[in-house]
Length: 281
Image (cartoon, rainbow, N blue to C red; front, side, top):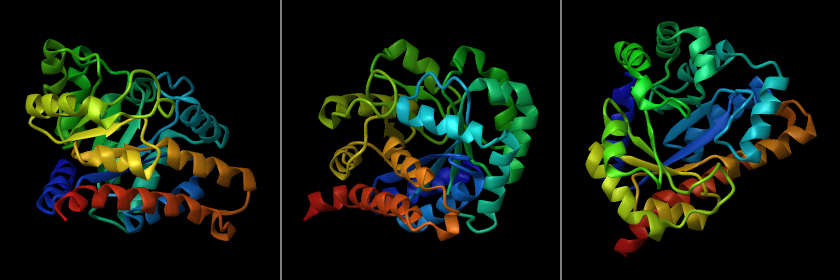
């Protein structure tokens, strides 16, 4: 189903006048079983789409929160094959929620484009975000992903001009990820009013939904983004809860703190889903 699963999710939410809540977590943080327990609970908590990070030793676009998550995952021995297995296990329980893999080029290149795309598709992934892949050098990767019906989702930023935007949107599928602030993840707060015009510009150029990420930590900021964008992406706020969970070092099934991650997700999801409906009252 792949790209169609993403398209259908956005279409269903648009029909309800709702923005999507996209939840990001790092695979293997702090271990694979904890990730799986959280992963399978996210749809019921309100996640419409899930971004599953695969760890890399030099995550240059990430702030301290996601950097430490990658470090915990790598310390636990997480491999790319483990990430694919998490997706496969999730698909045995959930055939509807889109899964977007997110990471950096080095692990993808190490495995090889065709093998990566085929393995991801067989596991049940729907899209891929590669933070450090310039569109001018992405044709071979895009070919492999297209052949396996996986969306390559590209990022636009506040510094993306009109000419560059046309390059970015070419061959992009699923949605466009708009980075709301200059800098790394989880540090600066998003200003929805300041980016509203940019979201419209990107949506018109791509003819795709626009998901806004970076700087969304609170229900208030999530709701403000949901009013102007097609999706709000939250990562660091959830990963902070996972970091607190990691400190307890209990098995996930015996750890009551695991529910804090899903409770946080539910609060943020409710803010996103109710943002536009509140304006109609």
